[in-house]
Length: 102
Image (cartoon, rainbow, N blue to C red; front, side, top):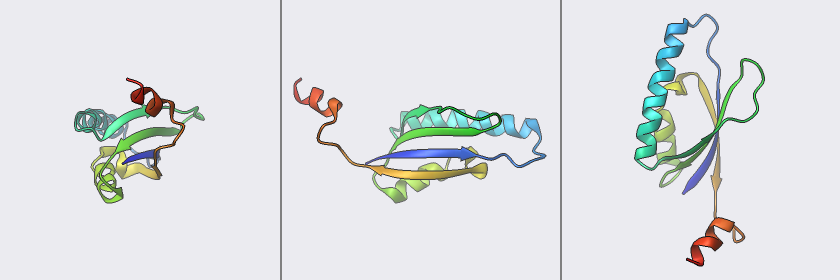
């Protein structure tokens, strides 16, 4: 099952820059691991306001409980809120149509 996740990060005021850099580095490394495992499919950066941290992610997981485990494993989760939208196939999806003609 696929999920669209809007991830919004709010770093607490007064957090040392070194701590932010550390968490971001661990997040990048873990994101690579999640991609290799097939859980993290895509990431996008929507238009942002100054100082805003927001990312859109396409994730795959067996169900919502497994997705929560995946999201909870991400280092930035300590400062992040996630809005999850479960996705279902659309009958007019061009990707599905092109795979049927192969």
